[in-house]
Length: 298
Image (cartoon, rainbow, N blue to C red; front, side, top):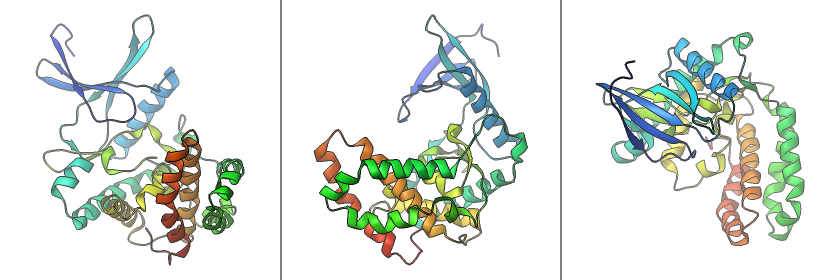
């Protein structure tokens, strides 16, 4: 890389992580330069480098990190990636794809993500292992801290049957095995290039965990009626991952993650009474649907 040439930066907007991202032009080469918001210490950058290496080793289209470092008196950190030309798949699919095409794309990504499950655990050094006992205790703590609010708003009746299932915690996952997961699968975390190739990005949330926890941060939103495109992509992803089937107790696992997602969002909105009541109004039919579904919700 010849740094004697002029460097030109063009900011890329649209991300939600708070990071600053730029296309970096160096001569006739284009790179992606990212100033992360949350990578506060070097081990997190080493983790990202290892995650990129795992994707490359498994031949899954993803980010390729070229290096990282820091500059200035405040030690502001940066990462340098190979630039992936194209468009995020959420924007692309909203403009150009039918539901069946979105489902097919999800199936392709799920098939690729299945490769992560074969990666040897003993070769993982920086990747977090999900502890279901600790996660269940986290859900219990949230539930009890929010119990008065749930009682006051009469939402406890909708929550109670879901809570009963969620209390079974790790037992819901005894028929499935953990493996490496992307950690935040969604269309906006995929780039589609001009040739139609799809690349997984925003890969720093990788964990050694269970497949359904790919959707920890979006599960309840996925189930809203208007989110048919999101839902179709996820159904396709799961079809690719599970060969058009679902493991035992998968619906109960969905309930587990949905209640976690709901409680975490409720806790986040506590400062705003109007917002939390609007959220409860939106979520009430989703919670009812979860318990009344025949198990085909995803």
